[in-house]
Amino acid sequence: MSQLHQMSGKSDATKREWSRFKYPQSLYKYGITLGVVLFIIYSLHYLNVDLSRLFGIFGRLGDLLANRYYPPDIEYIKDADYIGSIIETIQMAYLGALFGILISIFLGWFAAYNVSPSRRYLYPVARVVTMLFRSVHEMIWAILFVTILGFGMLPGVLALTMFSVGFAGKLFAEEIEAIHMGEVEAIRAMGGNHLQVFVYGVVPQVRVALTGIAIYTWDVAFRAATVVGFVGAGGMGWYLKRNVMQIETHRTAAILLSILILVIISEFISAWARNYVSKAK
Amino acid sequence: MAILEVRDLKASYSSSGPEILKGISFEVENDDFFAIIGPSGAGKSTLIRCINRLLEPSSGSIKLNGVDVLKLNNKELRHLRRHIGMIFQEFNLINRMSVMDNVLSGRLGYVGTLRSVLRIFSDKDIQNALMLLERVGLQDHVDKRADELSGGQRQRVGIARALMQEPTLLLLDEPTSALDPKISREVMELIKDIATELKVPVLCNIHDVQLAKETCNKIIGLQDGYKMFDGPTETLAQANLEEIYSMEVL
Ligand SMILES: Nc1ncnc2c1ncn2[C@@H]1O[C@H](COP(=O)(O)OP(=O)(O)OP(=O)(O)O)[C@@H](O)[C@H]1O
Ligand SMILES: [Mg+2]
Image (cartoon, rainbow over all chains, first blue to last red; front, side):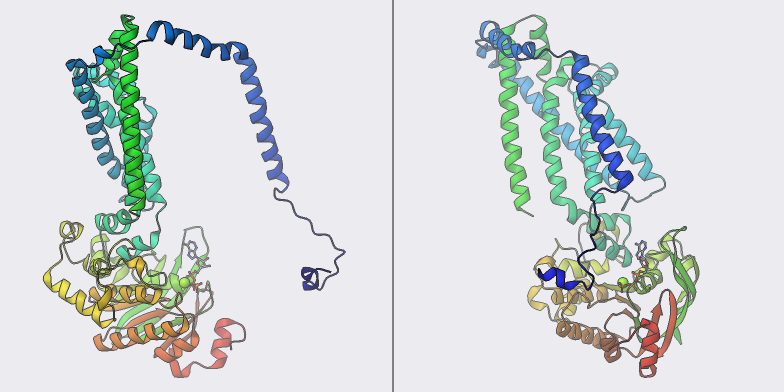
């Protein structure tokens, strides 16, 4: 007989009942699983996805690229004007992400329930604002600002700022809500005001996480910056649009290539930066 | 003369939730070292946290040096809290800051917001911090990060930080529960010595009845939100302990 059996004085004949999901919960769980599976089957059926056509896309895409887009017009992207637009793109992304992150720090603070300076007023307002910014696509922000301010970099920077706030604000708030409250309580107990609680009780705990999120924000802001020019909000997107419209396929190919390379470089730099930050503890 | 007067204090964590403190009254005199004992869940932490209103009591009154604590507005409350040092079971230090910065943070309520954010502290504060660190035996760890210290050392930082506030009352929530028995005694002794030196009254939650008897001159026994005992340590009898804990006590 095993050791465990000797432990209980009761006879071993009584079988104990246990299941991970008890009655009503088990019903919900299996019901939901079934529902999800049925929905997927229904959607596939509705879309009438023809698998052979789906895979055929790759073949035709290959043809298209080989015949019409190759070789990319490298001379075109070496042009000074175009290089200028690349620099403008980087500037826009930088400014947009920077302003966005700065705003997000405060917005995230206000929208974090545990340390919000005012649960009654600031908290709900900050929540709604983050949600609003999140729900609007960056191109819509760009169109909006171009309509108001005309073509150029400024609407681009503003659109990217809004976009970055939407991206980082919620993440910041969530990060702040997950902190250990002991430190916060200690600062409150010694008479610290809201700002002191934030700087001493909150920031040291979230600094690393916030830096990581800030780097991600730069990543997505840069990718967005390459296309907001499509609607006239500055940067290389404008060149992309013009050449697509004029069916200048070789130039388009060169531009896409340059975007690809820039995004990859930016990804590398931010991967390195994230790594560096996470080691800093 | 009573420095702290608590009358019929009631508290709960939510308006619909159960009442945790069910009418507690007691007085703390100028040179008291009060122990609050009682089984887990009796409301010891709740009581301590009501004194500086980290938890808002639902009714009753608290008078500290004649000031009605429950009537203060936010700003007045912050000013009052500057003078109440608090030491926690889990230390609650700022882990990513240095020992020195942790001790200096005890001055937060006194220095202006801008100065504190930039961590500009007066020369007097710096001198005091170094002196206190010496007093608690951490002179060799001034620039270490708080999370590089042992539990006993961290609690000493906690003590120094509370003393930086120049407190008129010390609230201790099981300051030694996270430490081993030997270090616990050392830390309690240190707190006791300093409290006597500075003539600061102390209110201290504590699990270890033996340790409470050794260090404290008065004891409050809580059980399930009621006060079951209140008196000088010598008068605490076995029968009282049995009543407080509702079970046999070693
Ligand atoms: N944040 C909270 N929210 C709701 N209820 C709480 C909270 N903290 C404590 N309680 C409840 O209040 C009661 C008293 O808790 P308290 O922490 O004051 O006990 P304690 O005497 O300090 O116990 P211990 O010795 O374990 O620290 C317990 O029943 C507990 O469940
Ligand atoms: Mg407790």
